Amino acid sequence: MVASTSEVYGDPLVHPQHEGYLGNVNPVGTRGVYDEAKRYAEAITMAYHRHHGVDTRIVRIFNTYGPHMRPDDGRMIPNFIHQALSGSPLTIYGDGSQTRSVQYVDDLIEGVLRLMRSAETRPVNIGNPVEYTVREVAEAILRLTGSESPLAHEPLPADDPKQRRPDITRAREILGWEPKVGAEEGLKTTIDWFAGGAAKTAAGG
Image 1 (cartoon, helix red, strand yellow):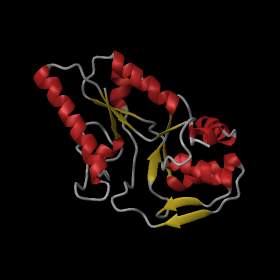
Image 2: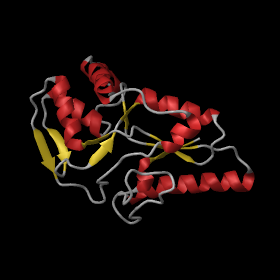
Image 3: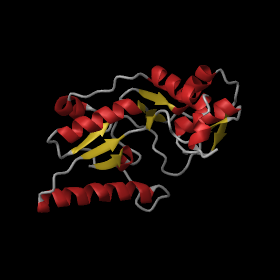
């Protein structure tokens, strides 16, 4: 199984993103190394599948969160939670209108297990099709933590995707899968874990 990513779609011109979409990636941009590495991983996986008959699976993972993430992970949700709990400003890049889909880790694991048990060798999106702006995610975390941290805006990085939402038709039809955990429930569980001091342990403190 290759753990690929929604980043193979780059800054998409198709919305939502389905597995047949070939993407909009800048190969020489600041994000190009990661995007193209995942695209190459998919390409070589399919080459081995076709030429050598290797039994393969490709899962395209969309933004996932949950307990046991490191507070210095660098991704949006652990960043926001750590900043909210510590009273630091929540860092939003750009105006926060760019969208993301966020899925709870339990849903991801269920999707991966179903894919591995299937005979599907094509790429499969595993993500939550409910779409939020980055600002909405930040505001939800402030509300759920009771934090009074302000929002701090920083320049938007080059080639940062403006929209991110999976088309999960293939997962629904082939795997009988769709996410079950809503953002409110998943964020509460994750915040409780961070607030309980477990995040400090995970960081080596």
